[in-house]
Length: 80
Image 1 (cartoon, rainbow, N blue to C red):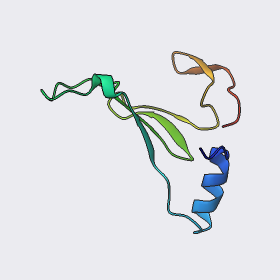
Image 2: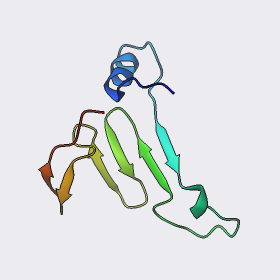
Image 3: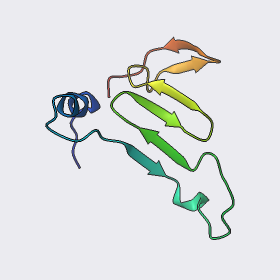
Image 4: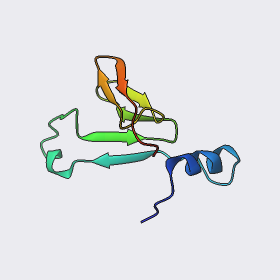
């Protein structure tokens, strides 16, 4: 498991060392063969933002892990 920070991936992709990374986490228990749509199944993150495409809900990775109330940031998250 590569434990480098997401910020390092950002730097490497911006300098052209690596292609731009887009990661996805999929809840395999919510996938099924009937093609039923579960909006929280896919979570995506890049060096710049993280969130759910189905909900149109993304936050800057600077605020990822923070606590929100509505659309207002209440507490900062740890650097990822």
